Length: 212
Image (cartoon, rainbow, N blue to C red):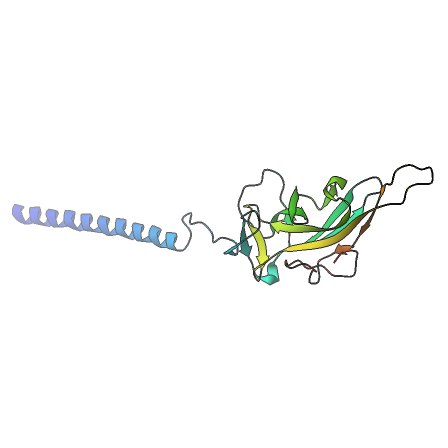
C-alpha cells in the first residue's frame, strides 16, 4: 500500500505542476493579446499622412482629410502710425502656446507669416503687427501658413493650408510745408475661411473682403 500511496502523491504533484504551467501560459497569451489590441502602451497612429512634398525650408507636408482639415484666412490693414496690422481667422484650428511638445495633434499648431515668400514671424495668436521694414515701396504678398507642432505643414490634396493678402506701399506726395515724402499704404483686403484662396496653397478665404 505504501508504494501505491507514493505513486498517487507523485501523480498529484505532476498535475499541480502542469496546471501551474498552463496558467502561466494563459496569462502571457492574455498580455500579448492586450498588446495587440493597443492596451499595453502601444503608440497611437500619427495624424494624417506625411508626404514627400516640402516647403522652402525643407519641412514635410502632413496631409489630412478635407472634412476635418484646418483652415486659415488673413486680413492685412495699414496701421495709422506705421507698419501693418495682420489678423488671422481660423477654423478647425487652435494656436499652441509656447513650450508645447513637438508632436502633431489634429487641429493644433502655429502659423508662419511670409512676405513675398520670406518667413518673417511665427504666430501663436491670431493678431500680429508687421513692421514697415518688411514692406518696402511696391506691391507685396503676405501669406499665413499653418504648421503642426512638429513643424510639418498642414496640407489638403497635396497643397499647404495657407492664405495670402496683397498689399501695396507707395510714396505719398510731398507735404505742403515742403517736407520730404512719406508713404501711403493700401491693402488688397482679407481672406477669410469659407472659399478658395487666390494663392496656389489651400486656404479657404473668400473674396468678399479686403484680400484675395
